[in-house]
Length: 523
Image 1 (cartoon, one colour):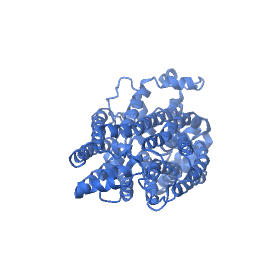
Image 2 (spheres, rainbow, N blue to C red):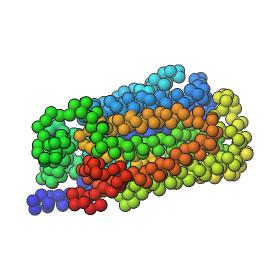
Image 3 (cartoon, one colour):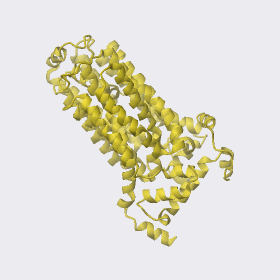
Image 4 (cartoon, rainbow, N blue to C red):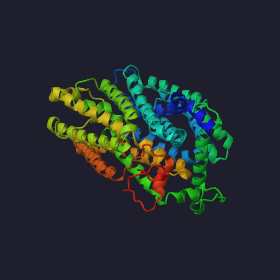
């Protein structure tokens, strides 16, 4: 034991963390591409409805404002299908191969999108990309949580969030100089890069143990802990084996602490697992996180962000404003990475949603005071001149900078917690036995909510007006603050085993938010 401890001490912190960062970065190339796809409608829609044609002077394809809501929804409709498939596929072939599987279709779809000349073909390609993005959900989420040390898991997960935000920034930045078709071709580079990078990182040790590939699991863990010898990871590997064995056991065997010899759970068994309290409690938590994330005003605006910015009368160029906003998203991710270990997830989230709520109410008040009654960002005639937006800039004058400040603050706050933290919780709150399956269902549920939110935004804004819609989503954010205050636990510096033990205690309700550390019961 002294020899083992001595070898572990010889590995520097940098060397121990570096392989975890490399493996996470390789996987995050596909998350980066997801961010690009999330921002892509923001440069496509203005070009196709004639709001922003200066970079696309030869564009002949046109769509109506009503079609824009469908275009934004197609990806969200296909994404849940991919998410539902991702769990079983990920369990069958592994996290690494499941990520590799979607890279080639993504590359081809992006290239074809740049050549598409009809609304139906663009819609189909959006659906294909959405399906592939859904297929990568379970493997990408579980991979990071399973390869990271408990003290590093939060930071590694927030790097994924930063990659997503950086993808948004890149697309909007390229949108200032290139046509949306050229940007589509640029986006094709990143899934192909992910294919190359993931070939050089190991499979998740937890999945390898699940398949009883002990030697491969040990080699993977050695790689991930700094290319060390098996003796250096002996203690962690033993704990990982015990956790894997316990998590795979049926309930009677787990209670008696004996090795389970029963057959592996079938698909029907996994469906039954959803009904158990230890699954329902974290699933309800994740569903609430996703609901308030998708119905936060600035997230719903994403496909329409350029026209919304113009409709508020903001003096700056709308395209430049979106790039600044995306840059703030990256800054927020960096802030999240640097503070999540000291401040904690719960405190960051509650602060974030509080600021979002206040900014929503402030932006709504601004709209009711300065904008004409019934004002919306959608124009009745999509090919008319931009005089309407010039008019509103003249009406609000320098007060437009107030709207700009509120939008940018809301963007920063949203990216810190409301959109930055759900991804982390999904990766860590579900029980090991059905983690990938439930991650797939949870992300499918998220994109069903996203599809509803995106599709209904056009109707809500045209019914309630732009400031009325902002007020509506602000009220939802306020409800979210109350709900999450009562059900969100602190998972920072808690192991996956600590979290699973907490939710497996049937005596605790979802409002019992204190998770004990280790077996000593320390909070």
